[in-house]
Image (cartoon, rainbow, N blue to C red; front, top):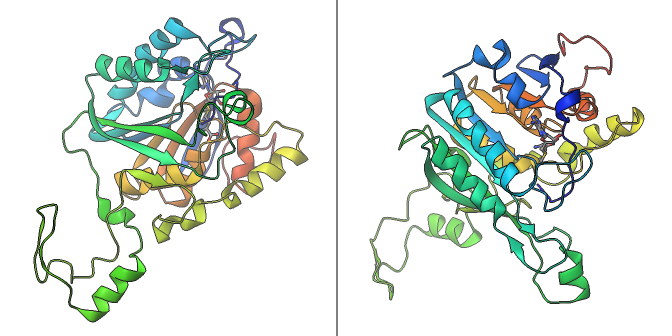
Length: 333
Ligand SMILES: C[S@@+](CC[C@H](N)C(=O)[O-])C[C@H]1O[C@@H](n2cnc3c(N)ncnc32)[C@H](O)[C@@H]1O
């Protein structure tokens, strides 16, 4: 998620949450999450959602016309959503929230608001922080431009934070589902079946056989490389820009705005594969272009997404071949 401005339905034009379309495995709800939470669309799934994966709208330093909440109001708004969203989770479910870095208006100073909002959210719903994951995207263009390109006074901002939280200490999770390919050296070692055992300068004792079993790949680090260079082979189709290609042309053809702050499909795919089984239920309360729903569908998970902006909802149909604009609300066929 980048710090671009996002539209939010204003209170007086707020729709009641309604189903916009349905696919084989999921449902897109048009409306604000606050409204959707009190409708059967979500109430019927209380205690049944295995994973919430989302990038919330960004806190703006200055309020835009139809813009996001700012400062303290943003914090309170996100905090108020913590408990009702957590109530939707299964006992072993997880919430994965992606939040990028934010900068103060007109100064090369980072805002702590995203962190404060996250802490308020975690505290309100008494969630455990399972792990803080950094999503590194070295291909990102230099920003904030004023301080990085022009003044040359800051480094390029190239990662987002992913906060993985849960009710339980051991939510459903299996890192064997998201193994990275072995390095060339490790592959050679596995072929050779011998290496330099003994005590390392760090004090680690490396046994004679400990590294000789082929586990199908190496356990990934908590810094996720979204370029695909160090990324599970099984999920490579979600890296790069390919996953969004059909969506972008659909928006163009139908004169709809392409969502300016889409989640990387590789990020969504990684956590869905890591934290859920096939047929599990995945929710994105701030669905945007419905990256999460489309990835979940392709990984054979059920999904629900909620999005407050009509144009983004309409554009998101382009992620499901077979769903025409203004067509049936009922099925992708
Ligand atoms: C960062 S974007 C999510 C992008 C999405 N992950 C994707 O890949 O396209 C946040 C989205 O939340 C939507 N939004 C803002 N306030 C909302 C609310 N109260 N309820 C539901 N959606 C909201 C915005 O319109 C925006 O599309």
